[in-house]
Length: 54
Length: 455
Image 1 (cartoon, rainbow over the protein chains, first blue to last red):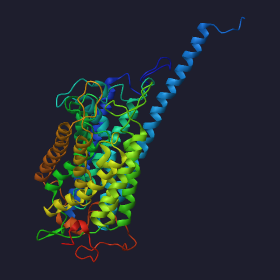
Image 2: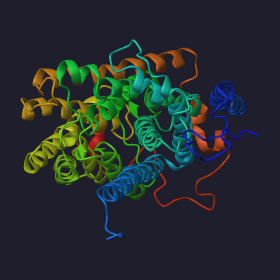
Image 3: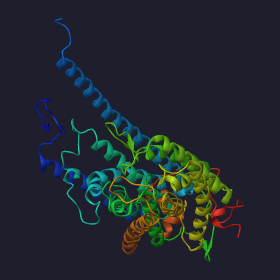
Image 4: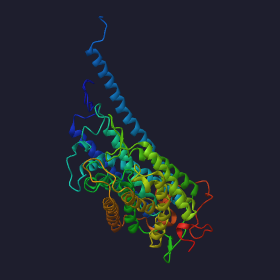
């Protein structure tokens, strides 16, 4: 589905979706969203944990 | 006569041999930086052991988890924007064209024709992770994990690499205008991270019980042996770090510094080891304290790293001894002013990094740079040291100030009392009993030189 090549002749960038800039942007946004989401989840976890010891 | 080689067949054979040689040379470059990157991971294993050991047992796992998560977040952050910052900002705050370094570029992934980008990106990503981890030890036992992660992503993914673009890039303005020389990253990594840490500590405040009526108290590590082993692991990892600072060129050029001047691993070997030894001796003389003695190895290497390629080894040793002596005094100076740096990171990395950059100007002024660049000078190094210090301090202070204002920087006092492990991680580092070295908050018969107990 994501292969960017059909032959190994004269290949340069050959990774999945290398020929699909839109998909690469989407994956980058997804990566950023996971980082931000993790930090938000840690903040929520901390707030809940600190609430219990009040 | 039919089988005699012709000129054309000999040329074809020669071309084939040349192609094989060039492919193997390119593979050697990859292999070299692959192992440098792997060895650099030992720095993180060391930070993990040393910061967990430096914490009281009630906070040991929290110290560890933030270390592990820091690496896991800085690596993708460096993929998303760190590499682009390095390539886009050598001339200052205005970006130049560097689309190939953006995360959606075809250069940023597996490519048969490109045997350089990935391996250099990996080495730089680990430099970033190291930079972000320098902050980690200083803030143990009271910072929120979330706040630390925000700060360390900013430090390891943005701040240091901006400084790296200025002072560690072939077109960096500190090099092109001032002849800045910092081959082993004393400034762009250590000074930046150390002064970023100082800015954070000023907003974070001291651990509860560290100062009573303004007098520094002893908060002993729960496992001093673990901290010593961790520090030695960091030293091991430094050989990967410093190996990653040298450029393995193809063709006839051989090794060069990141500034394009000739050097080799032999030069790095002389001065890395002499600096390591000198730093240990300097800090031992100054403190007789095991933690500081082992930290002295770091001080020594960092103190000579900026001029690793050009110092005479005996001079490197003397610089390291003297910097070790003074770095301890700087740590005491900070502590007397209410800064609780749990592992001495500001002194070991920030102070030493700045001193290292300036000393290159003192001892190696006049050394030529690559053609077209100004020679190394005291003024150039002094300007570079100030830039690196400010490049760390201003963002560190600014971002931690915002987090403090949002009440998101520090754990609540009750959490500090109970311990972050129990409150936030729901885990105990030693569930089957008390550890022998369980810290006592209030008393200790063992003097701690850093805590000014002799005064």
